[in-house]
Length: 215
Ligand code: DC
Image (cartoon, rainbow, N blue to C red):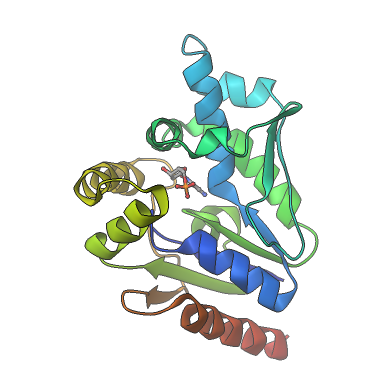
């Protein structure tokens, strides 16, 4: 069974998806980490097309079940778990994610992973493109200010700067031609402004249990 969680940057997807996977005993997939890995490669080798880099390098993750922290992300044999979390990589990730050649490579990898077992997968296009047949689809969002506040606290960065960078990434994710961020058909929208993590997790866990009971 698959629970798909999509939404804009800073909506709390990773925290919620990890806690939910723990609650349900499912495996967690952070699809954004794959785009970040391609972005890192592209910053290192700016003269090569990102799609070619995605194809040429082994991008893979070691998921933890149940997940207590981020999955370990590898490029070939290098552990890039920390290197992909910089602001420079965040910015580059939203650019490489607009490239259809990159999306094609990562889509194939994500579908292969999700074809077997029970998963909570989060990203921007899980419910719309990667797995439109997911048993549960959630569009997680929060006000722009709340999202920036959360990210700034997490990164120890200035809130106004994070808000400006976030607006740019939101626009790229929403306006891109290929697999733009949008609410999937049949998705439940959850605005997490003012909700705590546990409330959100319990709400989605209820949806997952109801979907399981219907099968
Ligand atoms: O969730 P994140 O911030 O780690 O994602 C990094 C970038 O990758 C973000 O700009 C959106 C993009 N992304 C995407 O286009 N599709 C996904 N399924 C996941 C992430």
